[in-house]
Length: 366
Image 1 (spheres, rainbow, N blue to C red):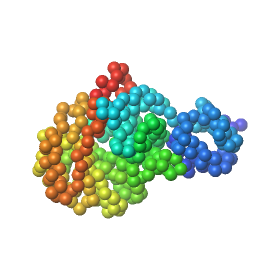
Image 2: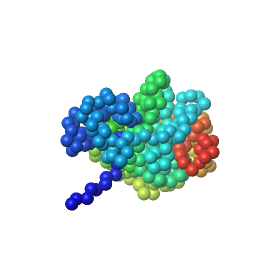
Image 3: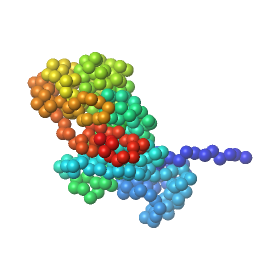
């Protein structure tokens, strides 16, 4: 007599197309039905299959047998706890509650004729950057691929009536993407699949605070996504004061990894630099940054500090930011001073801090 072994239900959004095909074959169904189901999930953005009348009979049977409460699969459906728009109407922040009660934040930013979504890859973050609200809250857990994919689905549904759809993705929300490498890569394979969500790799940017093994894996695996590296300091002492993970992967090791990445991929690297008044915004520091990036195909994004409750620093004034940029320009390093978006609703870079224990509303998250 054999004893049935219970299996933990999986989200259909966790599966790549190849994995979904294998599930059909294993259950004795034609893999051709996987394409119809995939399209319903990732193109039609179906939230449930309670009325699968438009499916062929074999696919209806597979859904009935395999999807639902107590069955092998479920459909990822985070609950929207809040949707708040910035005063300028160009930025929206969604507080999403996951199946286990954890909450994450996803931001959608509008530009002329297009939108960009900023995705979270973890609940909390283990990197501990001192000026980042997510780093201040600490690490809770990794997100599964389906929980990352679900954020894109949520953003697309929210933008259905908006002019210009979702065009670009940046993995710059809560968490460190390269700390959750395998789940992130699985999610991006699903998101960029042309048969579904179809957001091409050239429109996806992965941001890292400097997880060296992850950068080297991206290079070795020839991943086609853009890479953004948060520096914030051009000497070990200056960087370690802001980015504690630099003690594990020192600046010299990080830059060596970046050069390996560039050599193996030929891809330009974006470097993020949060401008903090009196800490890392002097012309001499700009000169050291330029020297650090010599020989790389680099672009520097200069980001005036956004306020968080756990850090006393202030943003570099506009004139000082432009003087910093001028040093880079003179050295031949292209750069952009980032627009500050969604600051009034704590949706800017470094401000995301979802906390399910807070009951006083969004004002407490600012």
